[in-house]
Image (cartoon, rainbow, N blue to C red; front, side):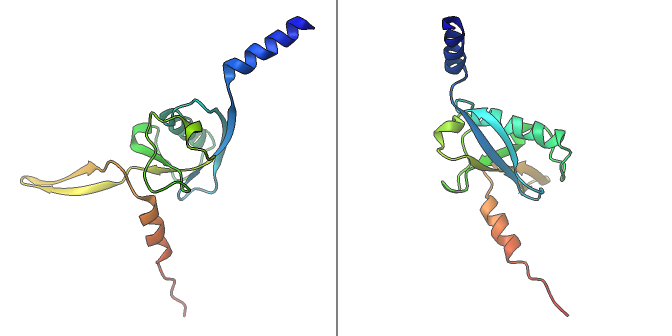
Length: 136
């Protein structure tokens, strides 16, 4: 009996606190839910989210490069979370996964597309709400 208790205590310390989190992808049917260690970094959570999303066969197809995405916490502000921040330090369990927006930059030799560092999912969301449906 003593041996079994000792093993349980070691396992509990090794895994740390685990959190059930929800990650919503704009345009998808619903949130992805999975359990993570609170000491996981945001970059690992983004990677796990993309893998779960693809495994479930959800649409729209996002791709698998986690560097093309940012994770937001809708309740804490409009800034994307740092990829090296731990997920438990945010203090919430609901997140939003967004693709980094592309912006068109005009150069001297033509037009090129570059990635913008932090996108605003709120601007996109507000814009989509402003679309009016015409009735006959």
